[in-house]
Image (tube, rainbow, N blue to C red; front, side, top):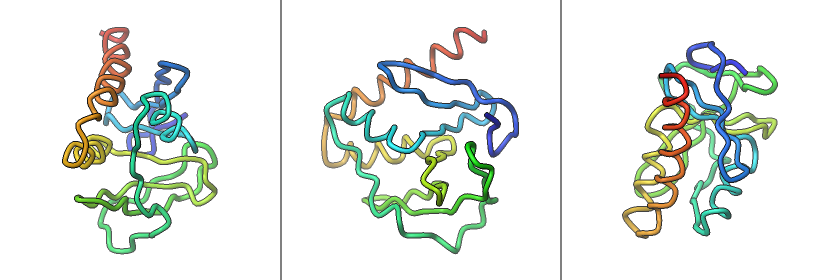
Length: 135
């Protein structure tokens, strides 16, 4: 699949039966529908996606295309202590997180719960393995 930012092929990173599409250029992450929830279940923790149905109109960021269907995705605000705007396919194919957005989502968890370390370890190891294979 092509990165919606760089338009280069993404790398599929698999760990603990979860597949995440990762762009080695811009460091963006694609989670197919339900993968965030699977990640939370595997790590025995909650990831609060907030009200992902709330579409954000006032964002200067370029619109992204869904990795699955190619349609323009909508910008949605994930609510919490910090507002994180991500791209969501309105056909429910998945979510695109630009570099740092997953970290921002996890930092919110850090403020209320100390159990986010397994998530950071999971993502770090999964993405680190891609860098090792490429380098």
